[in-house]
Length: 498
Image (cartoon, rainbow, N blue to C red; front, side, top):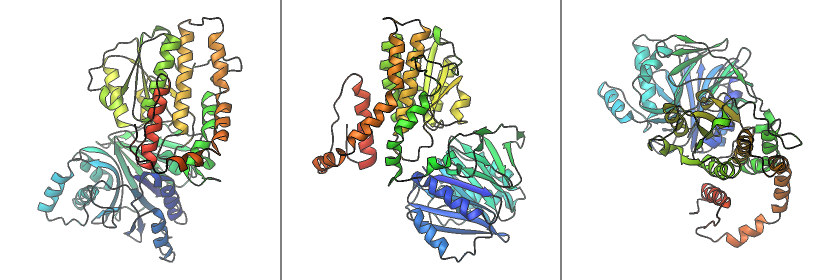
């Protein structure tokens, strides 16, 4: 997982915007970072191995000579091909073209061999450098950068998001994606590219999403999306209601701690407007035939899968509908069975999880009703689904899901209550309303729990700091919770846990 950011606009802003974008994306890659900037008809690159701070130090030593750039791309890397060193850091260069890339080019070895046979010299071990040389060849043959990228995309296999700029086309950045996220931010006389909305939230709240198989051309004066054949695509912008302070650490030492303490507000925001003071549910935004649902299938990966397991218990108990929960990566290979009375709930925080999107495709094949539960407005899953239930947790920057997991659980409990109401299951009298009122009080309970834990965590750490592995025990509704706990311990401490 790597982070991409791009900017075209004002020379006094370029370096500042790129570095701030990389700071917000550093969670996507820690081992190296770099920039490519258009300057006086050339591409200037500066790269460093290690954390982003080393790149900032290197920029400080340049005495401001890069401040006149008004277009550029940046990258923070998590190594997949080649060790984390300066040579393998992005951007990668090919004859006046600079490329940053998130993803895997599965056929890069074959393409690299072809390029070497044509006399191309490689300076890195990365799959990304292949893209740079393909673009350079296309431009040397007379193609504009966008057309060179379109031709290169037809040769690439894998999942990727790419941004590139050329010394020959000043004031322009092009980008494309296939199964990896890429968004466009819209500004006034300046425009942006990034791997995630959160990278740009300090600059704009207006965004365009680039679809698979499309190319976007970004300049200071505008943004145009094209098909690979060169046909322009009309795309409506969407607005994100996140605030700039949502991506600030504030008083917290790290983003995971901040997002743990964001949980009450994330849950409160997710419930707001969907649950009144009497406990009545309003899911009018979910425009599906819920009353006719005879079966539910839930798909997700990691924390989303665990949220789905909790939803299974709630839906079966409250709405009396059979529920299956599948790891999204396995769902499409399992020959899933269903029809138009099957509700398929696809859970993805980013809305861009490749395996979950593939599961949605499998569900479409049998005609199921598809509901996306996601935290990201305008994401790909929101357009693939028949309806969307947005969680409202704000941007998630910490690698391990905290507030987004809880928001998913809250949204799914709302759905369970809504399904029960649609099926007329309210026995004993007022039981659904009582449960709704209890759910409405949940954010306060989470807040109280966080307060109770303040003095206990350090004591627990002292007791278990010498542990070499961990076993989490629970059953019934606690079973998905212990799975999530074990996942968190593995993600954060690298201790074996189960």
